[in-house]
Length: 555
Image (cartoon, rainbow, N blue to C red):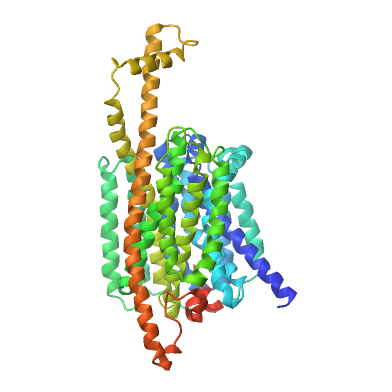
């Protein structure tokens, strides 16, 4: 390898990392600081939540749209125009001063975010020799996951620079660097190909509209409450109608937008369901732990070290999973991820009102490693069979994978918030039943709390009322902690069920591969066809692990 080629590969690796961080931070810097943005915009919590809804509603369907655009116009033009739009959307955040304008720029950013994730993975794949390009594939997804913990580490400093506008200074800077880098280091691009049919212009609005309304219902239902707001049900019903019309329309076309018949194969159904449930249980880290720490008065500044550890553990987890997959095969990664999730959840389920970020370092590092194992296994097991078929179903697979990822994140957040709200009500009632004002211990505690405000409240009756209010606050806080403990226990229980199911499927697949190997040993022509799907990475055929051309459209 010449020094020039080595320099190009290093440049591709750095470019991919920068683009991946730009995309990931663009999503999570806003989601991690909704309270600060809410105050800066003078919005309510429900109004600020539309920033997240707008991003996901746009991103859910834009992946499919942008894949087709990339095939149609070519990679070079796709990269340049997409990055310019991303840069413009990031810069417009600096001028948004109202909820409506902020929601529009978030939707704009969500629409073009798949461009960044695509380029991040392509550049990191190009950074490795053909034999090791699967490493670049996994590292591409790794950098796309680092934005969540990094956003909480960086937020306090960015907010000091310019309140909520300061959050997006780093995103604008990374987008500028990315734009310069893709013009300095260009990817080899296949020629454009026709990817649109006239029927797509009918099918895509139905598909996008249905998913957008579904994301609105899922993300807003937990805030306005599922059964208390008519328009939540109306959005859900409309989404079902639109998606149903899309399915009826696409099933009767020779060239459908998505190959729905291929998606209902047993392998794809198992894959999508597994990804969906994994994203739900992994919401413990992004939503559950953050919510618990917020209840206990901890801000991003106090959680900085915790999420620095999470960032490091996520990155190291991906590196470790590459070695595990090479030795044991990718199937074991799903089981490993579940073991880590169950362990971390049970550890977190012992939280008390005195728990601080320092007590969560180990459990969150374990969960971060579980996230890395999940993504590594999903990418290897999902893309392998698709690329082995020549990539003809790549568009359909990407649509299903993205839908499961984003929808799983939304469902995870909604389920966590709903479960905590329900369990907090139950736990508060249980605690309140034991508080009797005639109880000497309760009387003593009320006297202590009333005494704590004696310096500022001179009226004895008012001090008593203040003491009772402080006691109610403590009961509420304790009930919230118990509710989060119940949540973590439920996540561990779901993990156990998933482990049993996935273990059974893995054993069946192992037995099937074993029989195939035995058959191939007796038939040399079959043995030359390549290693079976699910074999260790080093033993798989180039169609499964990927050649440069095969992996290039992988994100």
